[in-house]
Amino acid sequence: MDKESVAQQYEPVAEIGEGAYGKVYKARDLKNEGRFVALKRVRVQTEEEGMPLSTIREVAVLRQLEAFEHPNVVRLFDVCTVSRSDRETKLTLVFEHVDQDLTTYLEKAPDPGVPPETIKDMMYQLLQGLDFLHSHRVVHRDLKPQNILVTSGGQIKLADFGLARIYSFQMALTSVVVTLWYRAPEVLLQSSYATPVDLWSVGCIFAEMFRRRPLFRGNSDVDQLGKILDVVGVPSVEDWPQEVALPQSAFSPRPPQPIGELVPDMEELGKSLLLVSIRYTHTHTHTLSLSLSLSLSLSLSLCLSCLSVLSVCPVCLSCLSVLSVLSVCLSVCLSCLSVLSVCLSVRLSCLSVLSVCPVCLSVCLSVCLSVCLSVCLSVCLSVCLSVCLSVCLSVCLSVCLSVCLSVCLSV
Image (cartoon, rainbow, N blue to C red):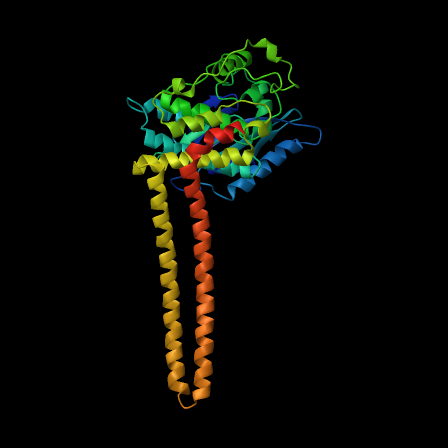
């Protein structure tokens, strides 16, 4: 879509934001009545061959993700080239419009703040969105309340993901200060990093939702790192990344601060999630692999949501899960019984037709009975087994997680 096409389809009605990544406008979609979009205008450096291949790849990945329409990821409707010169290309990214971000949502919350049940639900949605991005090899890297959108119905949507290369040129042209408060130590140290850096940001946001103020508020990379190490402790020389310019000796030794002192009002499972999220080491296998970090954090937030609704202990919760499994199995078995009743009616028809021939009748009955039983029982067993395995795995996680968490972390 070119500049003229953008002007024909989208009518800007208000400027809703401006940051290091450029200006954002709320616009009316003239071809879809009643729909508003967010227009984000950015500049990309132009190379001799045109737009950088890395930028084209990023846009292609985002367009592929759009096909899934994940409920916790903001939709990217279009990418439009507005103008092009030898030095830069101006793009307009057309996103789904959401009225507020998490920062605004938290500021509007009346005292004493957002209810714990709402926080847990939002965390679960946030982790689902991150799990989706990570499963498609997209690292957000700059997750913060300003790019977590909240709909009027409380639905969480992640924004500004996968655009690091597109935004890098725009950021170099602006003097706007980038927020460091939610960045992982690996990012601050300019060390190698992967998807676990997003989990660090999630932990900072999680704590802020309870505290109503940021967990770490540094004014520079070094100051931010110092505030982080005041809480998590200074890693050993062996754990300090060797490829960074800042040595471990630049920070005086200090023990980690108990999580309970940071968020005293948070329940134990929530503190466990926070502990998993903000435990620093530069080697991912030393703390959490990508799959472990996502599955563990998802399980924790799911347990939090369930416990807040049911107000029962994990053992009682497991009993309810078992009852749910039995209910599913019963419904499957009832379906099988209805199939068997059909087979029985067929057998009765065989009786009336073949009653003149005892041999034919005997063969018909035995074959019909064996086929019906074998098919129905195999279907019932396979379905029940599949359901039982998946649900029981969830039950085991919820029951054993609090007991095994410290052991898993130490290993």
